[in-house]
Length: 257
Ligand SMILES: Nc1ncnc2c1ncn2[C@@H]1O[C@H](COP(=O)(O)OP(=O)(O)OP(=O)(O)O)[C@@H](O)[C@H]1O
Ligand SMILES: [Mg+2]
Image (tube, rainbow, N blue to C red; front, side):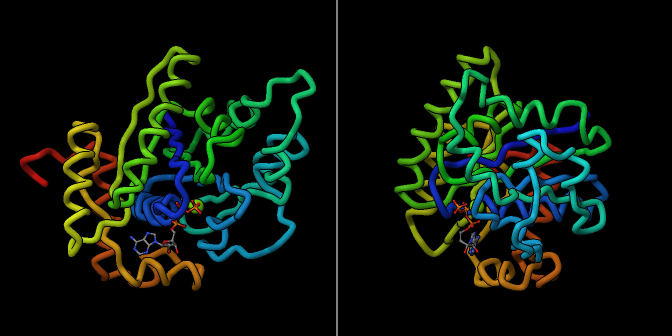
């Protein structure tokens, strides 16, 4: 069974793309077959993997049924495929409905596809518009990267309201996990935010926290994941541990934090 996971948080800059790139590469390194969809018109995910071609087609044309998913899928690393955003993805966000349902375009594009993959990840944009609705309708599983500052917590209640709304409308519950994606151990607020998250998301916060490091901020400019840019660094270790948490459902409890 393929696990289809949306990486969402409507707050910008919390580490969605960084988590997607490095977690996916770590899973691929473990031998899992992984496909990532760049679902943000900014196209940062593709750039982070070193794909900087403009005018590339991607999930945009697959959703508009102008190309097959196979046509727009690129192999970027061993076991790792990328479906770029495509230059029309921003138009999909603004599309008028003309009576046709617009929220199911991604679900329909993925139906019966990529069945040999262990994981499909969707790197969502920082919004709660139509693209995120498409991701939430297509998936049953959500991974929420969280920065460890006060305003990130504020944003989380907004996100949870969106998730609950979709759960109500779709009459199903998501498997939801939280990853602490920008942890600063020298700041007291980081520990406080973590405690609050553990309270509100018991058994849902993945065991490994991703620490804030200069290396993680540097590697996108080289088009490399942290596993390539600095494979022995503690950030590479963080993401390898996170990949195992994800596979084994290892979560943080108040005792092991
Ligand atoms: N753990 C970290 N340590 C250092 N820098 C980080 C870390 N996580 C993310 N960053 C940096 O912070 C910036 C924002 O991260 P990223 O692009 O992953 O966030 P995002 O949630 O995808 O943003 P957006 O909402 O715009 O899509 C980037 O410059 C990234 O390199
Ligand atoms: Mg992003």
